[in-house]
Image 1 (cartoon, rainbow, N blue to C red):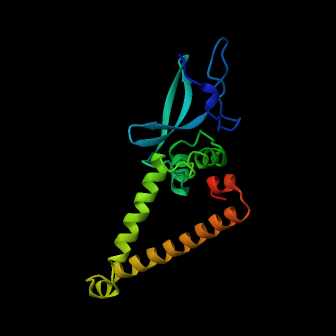
Image 2: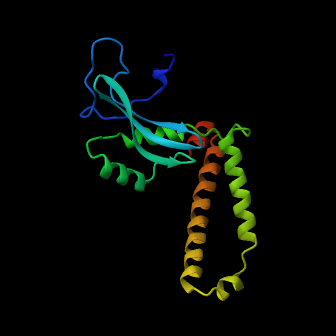
Image 3: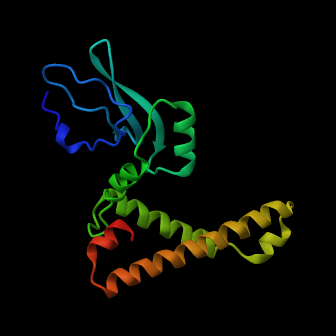
Length: 174
């Protein structure tokens, strides 16, 4: 078929695998990230009636992220599938190459950061006080504080990576 199966990393733990059949096969059962259109999906290969079919475990959105919510939902919806979440997350972390300024993911991230910066610059405290709902004002402040702490953590990670000249840790967000 011409599909490079060797590039797909198996991330299903050994206690749930499809039986190996004689002849050519895709190997052990595995879960992986697949892009379809503008969205990413977590899929898992299963063998039914001698054919390999893909079981869509979760829609990950336009930027592939495996959050704790995704882990809970997949574990609840598909309790028979035991995934190696650490390996899946590592597979995703290696996909964004910050060194390539022309990469679509880098351009989208930069664009989103610029838009957020402009939106925040246009937000003035009197607007929050005029808000008809104190809950809305509180939620905005909570989210801005969360954003501030996230930005500080990321700036420290980038600073550490540059200080040690470690381009690999910069790419992996360590």
